[in-house]
Image 1 (cartoon, each protein chain N blue to C red):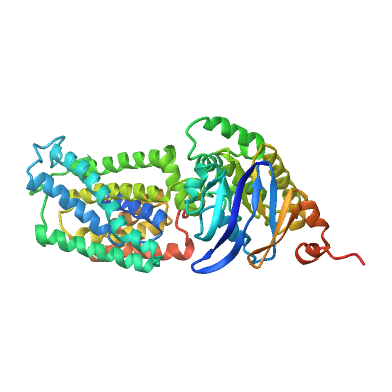
Image 2 (image 1 turned 135 degrees about the vertical axis):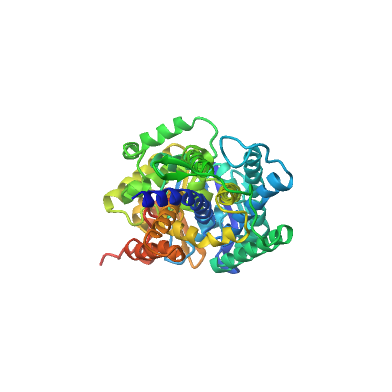
Length: 239
Length: 301
């Protein structure tokens, strides 16, 4: 077992309001873990707290066995983690290539190699490499957002609702890409509204409710659990 | 017709000054998201730093290339660029940074900058007095471009310097890692931070570049007009007009906006009394805000 990320009793929020309380989760390399839960459960807060974008009130976050609590995002990026926000996850006035250059900002060598790798993974971006990112369609934007986050060869990727606002075909495409990325050895922790679809692609899942972990199991077990299905996945029991 | 062309030439000279000033204003806005009301006064400060070097320290030297000034002015421009770059970073660290940390709104930030401007004016007046001065007193003769259309060598210098600075800025913003990071930060600061860009460093560089542009624009204004403390502040509104015309946050838009503002107000004097000319760009601005609210070129760098 190779835990790349582990939160221990993590408590965080905005201002002095606690949003997530006592969260202990972990992520291994090459693993896809999905956090599901109703709106306002604290899913985005959890990702932001892990990535140094929110203050940690209590507990600890360990990345590759070192504490990253209190570090700022640019330090966490340099340690090998990457984050894709749900919205505004590209630089619209920069070209596709420039977006990827910014993704690889901390890279000092083999930039071109990594750029070629991203264009292989997302061929539709290669064709538009000099175009402004604002010209891209929703699915292409999401591809660019993923490619930007991969420019530093991270070992861990945090994804905030990667399939939000995408058509079913594009959702499928993005989930396939996420599986490809995980197969390269990257641990992926994502939160999703399209919970059922996301869990089908995942190894494990956490159910977050009211800022606490309500449930944790393998993705298959969560999908099979009638209670979770009814409460969080919108699956109706067959009569 | 010659009269109009003469006014256009004059407009290009003033437009160079307003354009470079606006470029600095819009760059700092792009990153900090507040309107810096001290910008005009920092331009005035630039004139006085240059005045100190070439007149008070007596470093002007003999005139060169038919210009009214000597090599000392080039030295003064270089020194002022460095000093104002440092000054702009220092003001940010001392005042604006604290306000940002306290999550002050943009009105508080803008009023704070107005205060900075007033302090600059007071301090400069304390040292150099309230009266206008000249880098080089006397009449500087103009030379014909064609026919009766005239231009002073100093004005050719102003236009040439603007072209050089524009090329440098283009190279910086589009072909260097720093420039791309600046554009990314202006576009989406949160994403820039999670991409591993240190936003505080980018802020410091942006203020330094803004300070440098302000230095050049301010000294050009002193060469074209006089060394006078209110000149920078008087240009603040035309500069804001240029920034909005070109699309807030867009340096090329600001430069073009500067030319639109200056040429329109100069050319208008062919038909209306000179006293009304400052109003002309604002009439254009209001029409443009109704027709195209995001500016001629939109708000992206």
